Image (tube, rainbow, N blue to C red):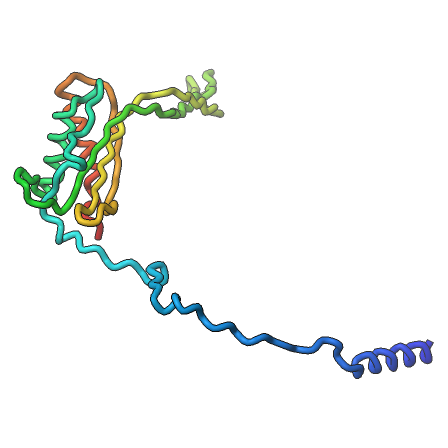
Length: 200
């Protein structure tokens, strides 16, 4: 057994001392193409920080008021959006000067699933030596799922010079109520959507 171990050990040492069949070789890096010196890769640099303070006025994108729906007409949506923008220092343009921002707004009805959990307990009642006894020893949660209709308001802002989107947000509100209640709900939803403008 000792001889066998010695022979195997000798063979292992002999294998380690044999030359490596793999030889390191590399080809030179090819020269860059001539057009590489004139090509600017914007993705290699971080985007410049946007100065939201430079935006002072706005106009409707493509000169179009928001489309109305059966829930709210075009004038109501435009009034709610205009009021929210005004509170953030953005004034609508009423002449032919170039705008800083283009604005679009959208109102649509969507369906949502809501869940409500009710805990119903199983109790007992009876008598003991101190009188009537009542207690609760178990409860079973019952989850009910139902569908509701909500109104989703979306506001998009675009840089008027470049056409690039600069900000977007949406919020939702309930779809029930009278015409005046809907107007209030619409204004609240737009205000909620505009809460984070300008981004910090």
